[in-house]
Amino acid sequence: MSTSRIAFNMANYSFLTIMCLLALFPFLNVLALSLSNKTAAAAGLVKLWPVDFTLSSYQFVFLRHEFFTALGITLERVLLGTALSMLISVLAAYPLSKEERAFPGRTLYAWAFVFTILFNGGLIPWYMTIKMTGILDSIWALVLPGAVQVFNCLLLLNFFRGLPKALEEAAFVDGASHWTTLGRIFVPLSAPVLATVTLFTVVGHWNSWFDGIVLMNSPSHYPLQSYLQTVVVKMNTSTFANIDPVQAKLLGEISDRTVKAAQIFMATLPVLCVYPFLQKYFMSGIVLGSVKE
Amino acid sequence: MLSHRWKRLLPLHLMLLPALALLLIYGYGPITGIVIAFQKFMPSKGMFGSPFIGLDNFKYVWNLPDTKQVLANTVIIALCKIVLNLIVPIVLALLLNEIRLKLFKRTVQTIIYLPYFLSWVLLGGILIDILSPSQGIVNDLLRAFGFKPVFFLGDPSWFRFTVVFTDLWKEAGFNTIVFLAAVTNANPSLYEAAVIDGANRWKQTLSITLPSMLPVIILLATLSLGNVLNAGFDQIFNLYSPQVYSSGDILDTFVYRIGLIDTQYGVATAVGLFKSVISCLFISVSYALAYRLAGYRIF
Image 1 (cartoon, helix red, strand yellow):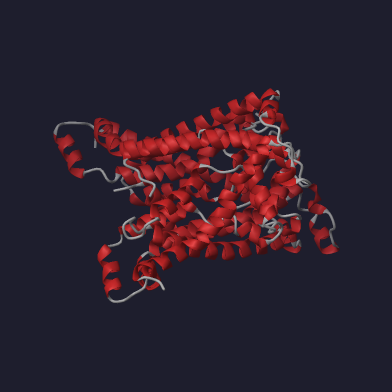
Image 2: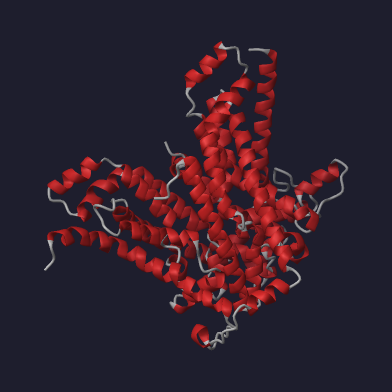
């Protein structure tokens, strides 16, 4: 290898390593803060490693029920919302993947779906509609309006299209109905794609915060990210209101800042844990939509 | 008495029913609510009882002192994001392509892709802490190097830069992986021929690697056109404050405050309608272009 190539390689590896550190250090800083004593945190001593290590911030969060109430609501919406959305999307993608000849009206239906991507009514009409259907302040407000993700339908539609026609024809000849063909043939063959779409739907529900804030009437009905929004971003000062003696003992070591850091990290943890194991699906999710052969 | 044809077609229509029903209610339903933009809307009277006032809401908003600035902020921030979210990932993909060590390459991809999966509530919370002028680690470092602390999220002249840069942090990983996937599709024999012809790595990159990425670059560029008015509500809502409205307030945050905080429903709907119409135009053009230039079909 030439010297210029070696030099380039060194610079390249260094640069990319710096990029990675840049991407990671905010998380490390927050993790370190959550495990540090409040005085050290306030003094600016905490960089990437905890100073005066203490688990009190986490203990405090565990003793307060708000975080876990919100977590429960998020889990509810993730399970209900993902199941509903996947079911509806798969059911819709199958007919849409047929050709106009085989399914007259298909193009009209497809345009009906796609039009909602092109144009929407805006925030206020959206809110008004949801209010008029009477689901405000219930789990359905978090699940129903977003249940039909047209992009997912399009993804599945295109994948179904790519399956060999012979399969469907053979099934038809054998007397299979559309339901059987979909359930017994198409769905099993689409397992990887379905897994990826399910994963992205789950992450979408997990990260959803705006609908919770707007559509739920009281903070005790907020899903996790909405609750965190009020605590971590809006500088809610009631973190230390209504403390019992057990929690009061921890106050010597924790501050608003360290408790926020602990909550942020706890909310990030599930994604961090799941991410390395499902790498394959996260990565394939990108290519699914964009790269066409 | 259903003919055989209908028996075959009925399940297909039935399968579409749930999705269509929900779309009709929550997708098309709000579109009928657009009439509010032309009314002096009173919640007690509802859509059918509120007086019709024509374009008055639009005139009112246009004459507000901040509206033009909000529009400018939206377009500037959105365009910066679109451009940088193409250029930076291209560079990263090209650099990653030169890495021979597979483990390093995969690790880098994994790490830069991670922030994409976190919400702006979490990222916002993290950023608010680390960018704090008094306690944040970034300003601590700046001070250590002799610079004065910068109020990244509170200084209007720094806010846009902070927004665009942190958005890159979150989103660049996604496009980088797309471009990297496209790069690996390049024909290896082209490189062999180039080496024989004496081309160095830089020349190879210019004449083989980049052109092989071109279709995907064009595709992503044209598709991103539709986002010209989407400056990133999630991000800005979680990072902004009244001090930076002058440079950071965008159409969506503007609509949110006017509509849900000030409850001026008619005015907020009017601004939302404006955004929807312009966005519709841009998205349609972007899909048409993507079809023409990259063969991309929606369905």
